[in-house]
Amino acid sequence: MNQPTAGSTPRRIFIDKQSPKAYHALVQTSEAVRAVAADAGLDRTLVELVNLRVSQINGCAYCLHVHTRAALRAGETTQRLGVLPAWRDTELFSPAERAALGLAEATTEPADAAAQESAYAAARAALTEDQISAVIWVAITINAFNRVSILSKHPVQASS
Image 1 (cartoon, rainbow, N blue to C red):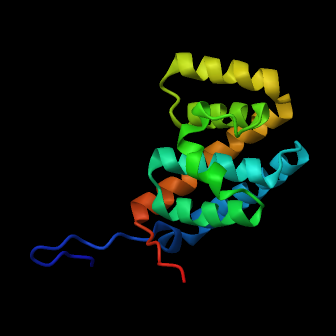
Image 2 (image 1 turned 90 degrees about the vertical axis):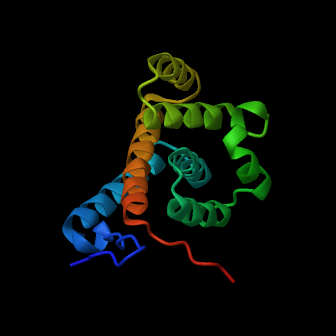
């Protein structure tokens, strides 16, 4: 059993390892969502921006680590990654990217109905229905992965 010793806290269970069938289903969902996004015409950098913004909101260090590297491999710039938390205050993002980021934030924090309606309206003006659906699915999927990593306390190892 995972009992704490005096002055310590118990190690977290890596739920992806503890319940591999459930985790594998999530991975399969992610693969399907990636295909939906590509079929909708969303490029990999936009998908990674959504993954990163949602992970920033949720405070998921592990997913931020993984998706920063993926965004850079996809051709994203360090400048845009650096200002991503303040994307509304810069002109570095296209209308489609801005719409996707707003929709991703509304998907991550759905309790704010006014912000959700505003984000959806902006998305309708800049994205197709297929793209809107894909962005929402990307945000839903990374939200799920964020919870897996946050609750498991997946470590981020130093890179060389």
